[in-house]
Length: 409
Ligand SMILES: Nc1nc2c(c(=O)[nH]1)N[C@H]1C(S)=C(S)[C@@H](COP(=O)(O)O)O[C@H]1N2
Ligand SMILES: [Mo]
Image (tube, rainbow, N blue to C red; front, side, top):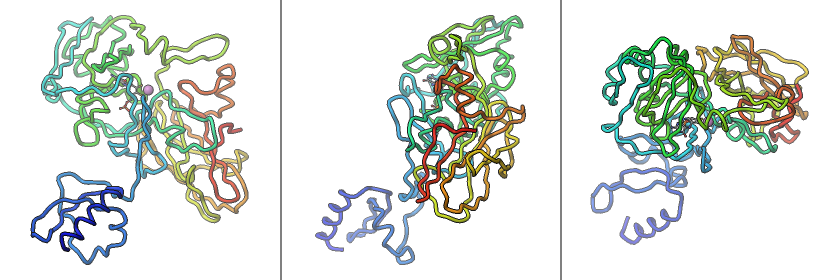
């Protein structure tokens, strides 16, 4: 390659989508980095030249276009593009009330005080010295529903849920350390973001299974997920899982903060508002086929995920005839408690227009409701917090797959 060609090539590369970085031997024998474009990757014969050498961190294939599609306040997991049930950490949904704070782990402190024998401040290294636990579970924002038009993907309908393996210390361990007063019934969790987000949580949940997590999928929690430490409350609405946590105050009553009075409450008809609806009810969605990907006539493996904040998923039922009949899908084991669970169902599509849908049932017997059941229970309201309707996909004769907001059954 002469100097001229090299310049031309660089110019061309500058205009194309930069996709990955490889090390190349230049005409001067110097190893340098340059960008590889998709076109180049696709047209080259990989057996004819030495590939990139091992790197400091791995990269995603430039052919995989995975995006969280951020708005100002949240970003969503592309459920239709994922396999299995563990969300790659960089694709975990995000919901911030005051942006992502930058916290120096050396300066990080967590204060636990209030109705305790001994108020204490824990540094991050203190937290890591306690017995650790790891658990795979989902997080979900209670505002996880969108259904206003046909052109919606699983990501857009309910992408405010993701699953990780969380590692940290049980909150009960810290409760014992500070000596929580037996008369206490609630605690306040406070974040150190610009929103200083606060929630009151029943103490019982703290004793039961709440984790103070400092790691996610094998590495330190990412800044967006609460670095260096956050609460994770298995099965409870994402809002209670306070990120960047800096203070826990033990009390004998809830604190009535903004996030549990004006926000995170839902109308239930008759002029009534429900407060402290913590548990995420069972839900499921078929992620294949799904908008925007069309299908072809013949055998199709329907795939999706189901989850419940109440416990394990015991059954996912599929209808391929618009809710007239239902059959059980196969669940992918191991089925974990309060975790995304994969399901699949083999279907032969004859090419006629139809609607396909899934409905989740959990170990408490809770059955995922239809949109009509939900809106009836809320005096005609659709949407709002804790809205988990059966989701139907219309399969058009030409193979297009569209979302249908008004699932009938
Ligand atoms: N400190 C703090 N904690 C927070 C939030 C926040 O804005 N600040 N957002 C909450 C909401 S509404 C949700 S749904 C989850 C989102 O967690 P994630 O961004 O890791 O997905 O964090 C919760 N914890
Ligand atoms: Mo949320």
